[in-house]
Picture 1 (cartoon, each protein chain N blue to C red):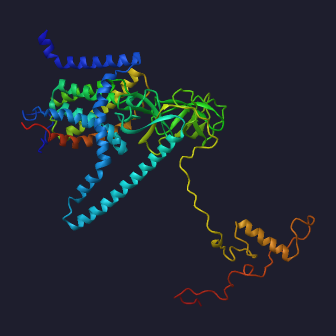
Picture 2: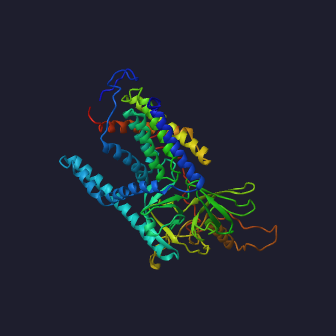
Length: 177
Length: 373
């Protein structure tokens, strides 16, 4: 795959193309991401840091370049995560909805095939996700939750690095245009 | 109006989605009720897949491993390397199987001995979210599991069921900050409330500073919370700090120290007495004593002139002084103060009374070195 190396803003029609995915990809990939988060840390505890559902939301929102599509993917994935946690339904749903919306908004303006852009955006949205979730737990539930900035930064970087590889793999599932 | 909605379609949908979810959160928080329908959908969608994955992992891992490793069987060096890898993995696999069998055996023994009625369950998933301290087990309302039931292992308590679905249940672990249980100390019968901290170590609150709790002491469930029956091990006190008005006590939970894969859900708990001795679920192997005729002590161990068995340096010195005293007719403990003591520099005859090596008659010359003028 060749990336546009010189610029990061959308400068041509090709860079502004909307990626399309088969329906089964839109269903199976988020489900697999949730399963990964639920199942894999049981046997590989060190992989518990990976926020696969978030990475998938960011990817689909960026690539489909549709704000409504992005927020809907985020809402469904977030609600599914809430269902499998002790959170009230909607906590991660709201956070992922916002992530999906903003990621799609950014995707309209930037060349999201560029690996550096993907790295930075994934890192940023991980921080956004963690901070907003912390804020909501405090504000809506009134529960104490530690926000360790250094740890979050490191986890954000690790998730961003994994995200690059994941996005590269998911690119292969795109419909040919 | 239509053009307005079209223009702000995205932001309108966003606001609606956020508002709907906020209402959902508010409804649950205010009424302390759950929207079970959505959870049941998700759990029903996810747990069968998790079960299939677990079954594949357990049953088909050997097949997959063999296939992967034998794929490059043509090249001899790679085949040999693969063989080594396969054996290592197999060894690891068998160790895991043995470990699982041990755990299953311990669970079965515990289940048959405990007066409480229990249901064995296997952990099939963890809660979503990086900070989650929740697991999913493969038993639900169909098996008689209900919300609020205690979850234990033979080593101690693990958590409690917070949601029971038809085929699975969500268990809040004792390390979760929302978890609390009544506990009582073994020695002083001091009561407190165990709370999770989100870390592997839990803390015990509400223990007045004048109460005596020591590090190393075992804590048991007190039964006050009406979830955990009295008498189940909780963990060992790790740190005790004096503070006002309550002590700061940190506890190392015992229920999860060997990991949690198989657990027991107490569907009918029975209170038990607090045992006098710490729980010992792991029997300690003690080998048979050696036969008497094979026990042969060395003829003259240590520096004891009389050939007594070697002890500490103090024992050796005591024996030596005793022999010196006997050789000079002195009895220790007799005689007035100021009377002549025995000569402790006396050289006794015998193998150990003799010097270890004769003094050198002339200075040693280093090998290869020329004698000095």
